[in-house]
Length: 355
Image 1 (cartoon, helix red, strand yellow):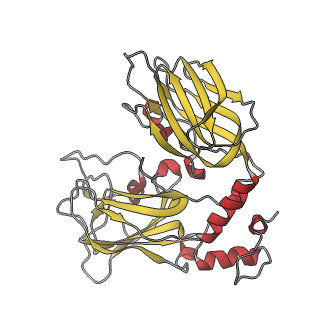
Image 2: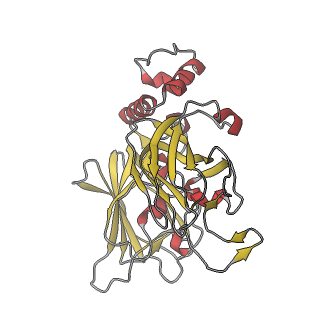
Image 3: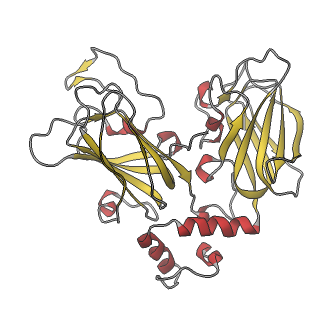
């Protein structure tokens, strides 16, 4: 399975500012839906495009857009998709990233320490432009530069979620949420929509915003295996069949595993209702690193939440991973805010949680 799009609007990503958006709105860059095009749909500013498009530059400089990621993380690949932009796509692009704490505004981000994710690179029009990123720093914001001007349909920033542990512990912790680092490992079927949809924040918006399989005719059943954000003891499972009325699963089962090979029961075969949010308390004290959700025989699930308690080692490991991937300036700011020396990592990383 591919890494999630850390910038997509459905995960909370937003375009904070842009140098120009004369022909098409900057917010289109992070829309979850694939870009579309309807010819001969004109406004007073020209043909409508499903993307971000700037006016033609007649002087020096170039255009840019500033995006706050919905999920901070380590960027692995970037797609600057110019779908349907043919005579009006940028010649080149450049992508920068930065990592900051809190919720800075546009003016504050101008003074952030920006580093290169994608060097200045040629673009082609009318489709994907995929770049591999080799930077092991946690990113909270990206800045897309297009040189000199033009249109980009979508910006996809795929990577590994690295949540701030200070936002996780001592609170209800969803172990499978994409925002916390949960991810799909494998599944039996995703004909109508992929299982990663179940792990998104918020409620399911419509039927295709969940996981739905084809109708089974072979007597079997569908399943998905998920990696948890960290080793933990699952306590509560929440299964929402929102919008699935004539196509919800008849029954589900849930199992856990500490090694991906040996499975133990978390929830026995249990009936579900259509268009309903179900909550089940799990009776286990065994930590898991993966779970397997089975639908009997098939159907659709809008959202899956799994709340639990991380192990002590998981708390240590998540905290260490987060801090070790912070850009230097952000790491120093974190240490200073806790009254710790800004020039060295504490031996006991639990002190970073401010407990």
